[in-house]
Amino acid sequence: MFELPKLNYPYDALEPYFDKQTMKIHHTKHHQAYLDNFNKALENYPEIQNMSPEQILKGIDKLDVPEDIRSKIKNHGGGYINHNIFFDLLGPKKEINHELVKQIEEEYGNIKNMIGKFDKVANTHFGSGWTWLVKDETGKLKIYSLPNQDSPYTLGHTPIINLDLWEHSYYLKYQNKRAEYIENWWNVLKIM
Ligand code: MN3
Image 1 (cartoon, rainbow, N blue to C red):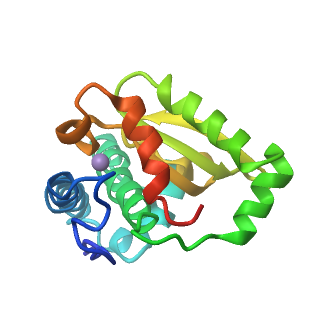
Image 2: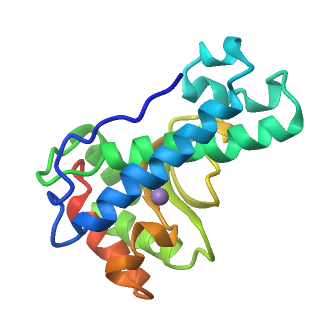
C-alpha cells in the first residue's frame, strides 16, 4: 500500500506566504484522503499495488479494471501524486535547479517570461485543478492547466512544477484572492 510522504519542513516553515493551518489541513486531511481512497481503490488489485503510482497513471487506459475503479485511480491516484509533487517542491529555502533554469531561459527567453505565462494560465483556469510546467514527449517545456486531479502522466508528459488551484489550498488565508496566492507561491517554490 502507498504511504503519505513526510514533509521535509514544519507546517509553519512557509509563513507568511503559506500559513501553518492551511499546510497542516492540506497535508494531514486532503493529501491523506486522496491516499486512503487510492489505496482503497486498489485493495483487490495486488498486481497494480506493485507498480509505482507514476506507472499506474501512465498506463491508466490499459489497466484491467472496471471503469469505476479506473475513475477512482484517476481522481485519487492523481490527487495523491499531484500532492506528492506539490509538497516536495516547497520549502523555506531556495534549492535552485540550475539545469531547469537554463532550459527555461532557452525556451522562454528568461524566467520572468515563463512566470508571466504560467501566472496567466493559472489565473484564467476556471474551477478546481492544477497548473503545470511539464516536459512533453519530446522533452520540450509546456505550460497548461488540467481540471480536477488530472495528471500530465496520463498524457505522456513529465511533471516539472505544479500549482494547486483547489480552494482548499488557499482559502483560509487568501479567501477569494487567488491571484495573490498564485503570486506568493513562487516565494515558497524552492527549485526556482
Ligand atoms: Mn490540494
